[in-house]
Each structure stands twice: as structure tokens, then as C-alpha cells.
Length: 455
Ligand SMILES: *Cc1c(COP(=O)(O)O)cnc(C)c1O
Image 1: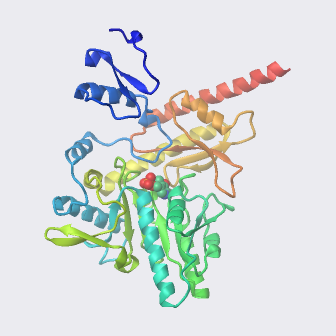
Image 2 (image 1 turned 30 degrees about the vertical axis):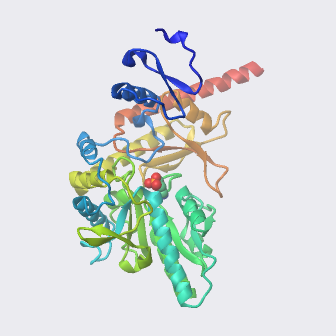
Image 3 (image 1 turned 135 degrees about the horizontal axis):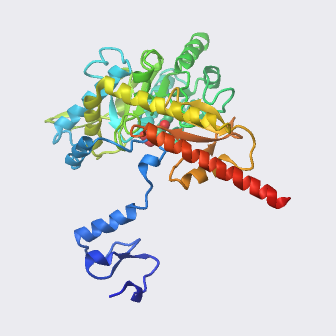
């Protein structure tokens, strides 16, 4: 039978005849009527996925795209485990506890919570962690207001216009005003702006350790100090949450002297993405609170656990345990020194690329890998092409480098951003810089051709 004799409808796909011995089609958007041979189905889905990009050339994402085969084995071996089944999988629950305690220690939670009973949990990622942390802020603020006999109807959350979209989601879903402070004099929130935006209805300030726009750290300690002063001067006492989605696994290893964490009394909660610089495949995140007092009791539910019950705080009920187990593997496998080496290497490579980008003479850098291993750069002078053209040109070499405008306050600045992750090498960095040079030549050549044509 030949393929060509069959008319294939637009909403159907042809199954590879080499595997099913004949021509079959399956509908794209409906459940197929019959069953497929397992191998044919596998090949079919695999062939579809082939069209996805090459993760190693994706310089856009912060999310882990490479793990050791041993980690993949462990994930494979724990695919059936459901993290909520604490009764059936008590050891997975124990492993989650250990991860929380390890992070509490890394983020300098005060003892005794920095010991074996830190307050926190795993999540699907930083977005779920943001929802949980945001809820805790809202609940605590409301309790304070109600206890004082004050109106608790108009909560707001203060953050820079550069926050990740999950915070705007939190605000919308939980009916909180997102008080987004436009950028002014920096690529992120400043201490003075943060304090100035707060009032008695502010449930908290979110400081970002590692802005997604350019990888810069917000000055968490300065923000904390400004909020301390605000409290002393006016009585408006606003808790600080740190969104350390990326920085939570960078700063402890590369910037140990930088106080951004529970060393600052004002920091009440911290989130981080295990699947970013935590070095685990997607989806795992973490959220920790300074103490039990910072996590309202009525947000906690209990699930059965070895005949007793165990407290949980999560949006989902069922969720894979595999990523949490993989997180534990990576923590045990690399230890402090391993993480430090890996993150330092990413930072070195980001700085190397930054220097190369600068050497082209065409760009001006907003960040150069000195905080997150990330660099953001804009065109140094107006050209006949834009950063969007550069991004498009790089795509023809397989590189995915996003271009976008900066947030409110800097919205007239368009940038390109490169995120360096574990698995990216100096060799790849050199290849990237060579392709960037070729892209710039092509764009300049086209600009010259177009000028010549018009004359
Ligand atoms: C990635 C990111 C998030 C969202 O994290 P997910 O783990 O992808 O849900 C939140 N905040 C910041 C600063 C981020 O970089």
C-alpha cells in the first residue's frame, strides 16, 4: 500500500508504515477508536517530539536540562510514587523533610528550626511556592488587622515591576492588589522605593534574588533595613519574602558573605526552584518559613501518616515524589563543594560570554554574570536592525536567546538574555560567540545591501 493513495485529512496523522506494516492514521484531536501497538505508538510519539528544540542550545530557560544518568535512573525507579501518600511512602516523606532541613540550614534559618524540624515543604516549582508564601502573608496580615479591629478588605503586595509573572498571578487569584513599583535608577526594586510603596494594607514586600530580566540581585539587606526603619518610624511593620527562585541555589555557594536570607530578621519566608539552579529536572520547588509563627495554622491540613497524621501545605493533592527524591540525590551527590564548583563554573562561563559580547563592540551589557550566571545586553547604538533580529538570526544556528523589552520604567530598552546552566561548556560558549559574530555580520551586510539598493 502506498501512502500517496490515501487521502489524509488535516486533523489526522499518518502512522509510520514501517512499524505498523501498513498505513494507519490517528486523529490529532480525538481519542483514537482502536488501540496501537506499543512500539508503533512509541515511535510515533518520539517522532513528534523530535521537533522540539535542542535543550542544550536553549539559552532562554533557567530550568535544568541536564542531569546525570544516575539521577535519571532514580527518577525512573520512583515514577509511581505519589508524594501525598505519606503512609505508603514514608521514606519519600522523610526525604522531603531532610531536603527542607538542608535548605533551612543553607538559608540560615535560626535554630531550632534550622535543625531537624524546619518549617517548609516541597512544591511543583516556585510558582506554587509563591502562592503558598503569598497566602501566609495575606492570612497573617488579616489576622493582625482583625485583632486590632481594623479593616482587612484591601490587601496589597509590594514588588518591583521586574517580578516574575507568578506574583501577578498570586495577586489576581487571591484578590490582592499587585503594587508593582516601576523601575527607576536600577533594573530592579530599590530599598527606598520598596519602603515608600508600603502602607498599613501591605501584606508583604517581595524581594527577588536573581531577577528573571537580567539576573541581578535585588538589595535584600537594604530593603530589610528600609522596612525596619519604616516600622520604627511609623509602626507599619511589613514582612519580607525573598523570591530566590534562582538565587537560592547560587548565593549560598558563590556569595556566602551576602546576607539575603534568614540572617535578616525581617525575612519571613523564602522560595526557590529545585528545578533551576537546584539542578533537578522540572517540577520541584521549595518554600520555607522562618518559624512556625510565620505560617498560619489554618492553612495547614493533615494527611494520614503511619497511623498518625502529618501536616501538609500544598495546592495539589497528588504529585510525583520522583523530583523530590532526585533533589535529595543531587544534594547528597554534590554536597556543598560540588554545588559550589558547578555554580562557579556557570558564573565563569557567563562572564566569559559577557566579555565576548562586549568585544563585538555592538552591545552594552546590563548584567555580566556577576550575580546569577546570566547576562542581559542591549544594542550599544541605534542600528538598522533590532535585538529581535539578532535573536532571530541566532535561531538559524539553533540558539534560543530571547529578546524582550524591560519592564515598566525601562520599557523603551530591549534586551537579549543568555542564561548559563549546568551542562553548558566553554566549548559551547565559544561556538555561541562565533555564531553571534556571524549573525552580526549578516545583519550588518543586509543593512549595507539595503542602503546600496536605495542609492
Ligand atoms: C522562574 C521563576 C519563578 C517561577 O518559578 P517556577 O519554578 O518556574 O514556577 C518565580 N520567580 C522567579 C524570580 C523566577 O526566576
